[in-house]
Every structure is written in C-alpha cells, then in structure tokens.
Image 1 (cartoon, rainbow, N blue to C red):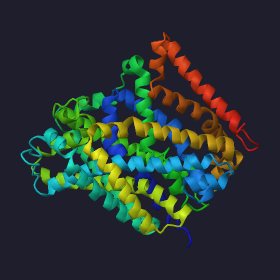
Image 2: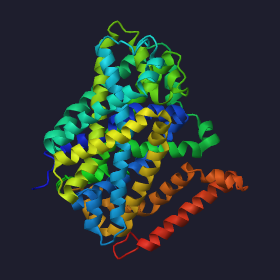
Image 3: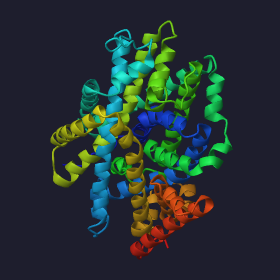
Image 4: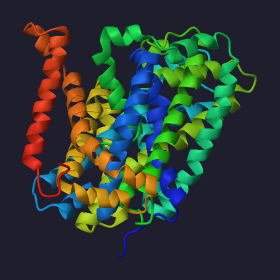
Length: 485
C-alpha cells in the first residue's frame, strides 16, 4: 500500500504548527515562565528558539523527507549501523512518555469545558467560578482525572485513525486558525483588566538581575521549553516531514512553523499574566494558589467569573484549547503509530488501538500521582528531548553531512541555499556542545562541582569543558567521508 503524503503545503505547515502550538504554548509556557524569572525566561527562551530550535527543526525535516520513514526506519535506511536505529526506538519511547502526561492535561481541559457547558457546576462542594484554585485541585488528580485522560486519549486516537490527509491534515487545518483568532481576542480583552500592567511588567520588562543571579537555573528550563514547544527532539517532526514531497522548501517551512509557534506562545503569556495579576494571584505560587501547572486554568476561570456571559466565554475558550491540545497529541500518537505501520506492517487501526491501551495505563499513573506527573512533565521530558535532539544533530552533521546539505537545498530558494553550509556547521558542531552543556546543567553537574570546591565561574567552565570533551569524542567517533568537517 502506498504511503500517505500531505495534500497541501498549508496542510503540512498547519499540522506542524499544531504539533508545536498545543499545550506547550497555552499551558506549559506560562507555567515555565512564571517559575523561572518571568521576562528573563522569555528572553532566553526566544534566543534558544531562534538559535537552537529552528536549526534543530530543519535537521529533523531533512532526516524525515530524505527517507520518507519514521525515526527508526529513517536511521535504518540511512546507515548500516546497529546503534543509530536505537535512537529511533528512543524517539518512539519519548512520544509515549510525552503523551502519558499530555493526555492528562488534555483531560483537565475537557473537564473545564464540560463544567462551563453545564453552568460551571463544581465537583462536589467545590464551585468552579467561586473557587478556581480548589476546583483545579479537585480535577487535577484522582480517578476522575483518569477518566478524563482516557476520553481525551480516545479523541486523539479517532483523529489519528483517519490517517494523514483525512484525519491529521483536516483536523489541524480547522483547529490552528481557531486557536489563533480566539487568543488574539482574549489578549485584547485581558489588556483592559485591572492591574494588567503589573502582568506586562512581570512578563515583558527584562530584569537582568535574574539572569545574573541564576543564569544556569533559567537556561535549562528555557531550553527544555523551546524544544518542547517546537516539537523537536522526540522525532515527531521527522515523522511529519516524512510525508512531504521533494518540491517543498524546508527552510521556508521551518521558519514559518517556528515563527507562528513562537507568536502563539508569546500571545498566550499576554493573556495569562495580565489575568493573574488582575486577580492578585502570584504567578510563582503553587497550583492551588493559582501558579504552577494550574496557572492557565485558575487564572482564566477566575477571570471568566467576572464576565456577564462568563460561562459562554469559558465554553469557547476551553473548547478551542481542547482543539489545540488535540493538534499536538495527534502528532505524539502518530510517531509510534507510524513506527508500527512502517516497520512491522501493522494496520493503522490495530496500531492505534494497541497504543491507546498502553498510554491509557501509563497516563493513568500520572493522573493518580501529582508528584509523578510533575517529574514526567518537567525534568524527564526535558532530558529526553535534549538527548534526542543532540543525537539527531550529530547524525545530520557527522553521518549525513553533505547529503544533508543536498536535502536542505532541494526545493529551497537561492537565499536559503546560501545558508545550507553554515547551517550544517551550526547543527553539527555548535549546537551539540550547547545542548550537552544544558543537559549537564539540568542534571546538576554544577552543584556536584561546587560540592568539591569548584564554584562560580570555575564550575561553569568545568561544565562547558565536559560538554566540549563529550562532543569532540562523538565527532571523532562519527567522522566519515560526508561529515561536516
């Protein structure tokens, strides 16, 4: 049976944007920003998106389109090594882990949508509008959260079951524009709320003292968020690009996806933070106080309660956020589905059904344990995405090498073709060192060095030195006739 492709260029771009936009921007971005210095986090995040995310996104596009395969199949097709296909297996596992917490958050959104439709009736004695923090605490964990997670997972499976054109492309083409339009309207409305200016100050007024005091503490979460929100590092973009034709300009498509995705993320902050401050909520507080993972739910529920037609606005907002969540979750499920379909000849219905059972179990575990959820949604995902993208970049720079340049330039314009060699140098040499440094920092290496007396600048230099040493070791081991240098 012939492998499916995207019907239109716009369909691919919106599907990729949908994969990136989702809850990474509407839920995780405000949460990460609040916990990591506000405007300081925003500046570092934007820099990483531009300098790391976009080149990394193009690296995944190159691998996917060159092979027309899922990550595992791509590495098998491009090398005789037995090691590189294991990176593809790791990508499939990353997709399962991502969906195991993501579907739980999707379930939260369905609960809020349902509560809005029914007149914002609370759970038991907990009123939705009257006490948004307590309501979130009630829906976030427990058996009811498991049920909502399973419902969201079934919706995701229904879209993926439809295939690339009839399911994913049609769905995201409808979902993504709706999300953007409603966010713009909400941002305009939020600007008129009392004390909204304080929210803008927290979010947009750059405070260099935050970075001076704990730059490394901001760098790790910012890098993880950039990779998460662009959907790079897991292999979802390899999978999506594998359905592309050869006449598409990868640089143009990659830049468009990154620009639209980042715009939605920044826009989400322009909605959430003014609303948080308008209600006197500390964005750095815990979940039940309005901060943390529940920031977007608590702040918007409280804001909607002040409107004459609050229930109607809440239905519209959470309904559209549900669509945004689905646009991302379908890419996470499509990753392991394409692996089973391409490599083992499993029919799409059987692949989807089996994976729904698996993620139903793993997701239920995170829905029942808030501590486990926090670990999976934060450091586990950040580490897996960083490792995955580092491997992809090393492969493109040192195994594909000049073949990657050929794929990069296919369908691209004259200006983009001039960037192909510098791009290969960046993804093959500079970015692996940066990502390894970020990974070692997030894993606590500076703290370990400090415990033996290597503090401050000396500790940073030691961490950079180890990142360079590991990267150079990889360069030497992988260097071949087509390598970047």
